[in-house]
Amino acid sequence: MYRKNVSPQDKRAIRSIVERQLQAFQDHDATTAFSLASPELQRQLRQPHAFMEMVRTHYHPVYNPRAVIFEGIIYIQQRPTLQMMLMSQGGNLVRALYMMQQQADFSWRIAGCQLLPVCIENRQHP
Image (cartoon, rainbow, N blue to C red):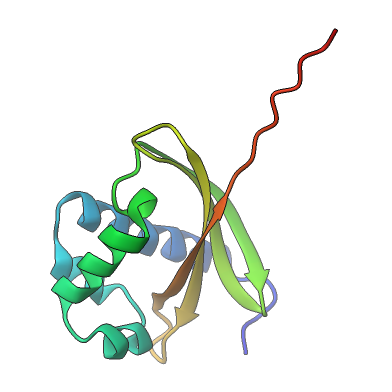
């Protein structure tokens, strides 16, 4: 079970892990990107190239964002989750929720990512 509030050091570590994975995607470095995923995700996908292909196909805004804004840690099902806003190369906004998992050695790994569309209303005032 996770503490309700992760420490400032944990927050920095979580953001660093996600930043490292985003950079690995930009560098087309499947081995590094895969190494930052949780053991469960690694078991499911088995190989770095399979992981990279899954991200490229189903999580393209994460794979190749034009811009990233880190919004902070929230808790989903008591799990620390890094919330961030991504802008795709086409200019569309998407919110990414990176669910994190602390390992036995107290390091952090990425346990999953959920993408949510961001709807921006364009209201014109009379």
